[in-house]
Length: 163
Image (cartoon, rainbow, N blue to C red; front, side):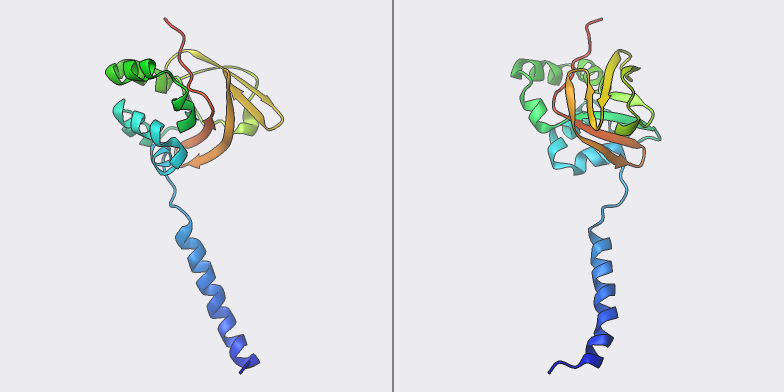
């Protein structure tokens, strides 16, 4: 039957089990490259990072801020453009590094104005309350932590200006 003394003895064991289960589901800290690989909505970006040879860079010390286009954002890019990027590794690298800023910029720290991308061109950032944009892309999920910076998921793929 219901034994109050037995229940008191089981309670700490159950609490410890719940605490351990919570720890088991917490992912280990990850670099930006690993975060992209682990995030289902960034699978296209993760593949392109590898194709461009940027995995080691985005596993490096950083810190970096990455404005990461979602899979949905890549679906909106014309097939011809995606084929051109697949055929030209340097162009792909330029497009991807245009989405990266040196330093760790959390959404709350975004100041309206231009910042220099790792690719070399300026990116226009803006923030109104918790609403953040980069160029004409909207941050749909901000402040995804990584061990070497931060990732902000955006709704568009940005192409750097022609030089």
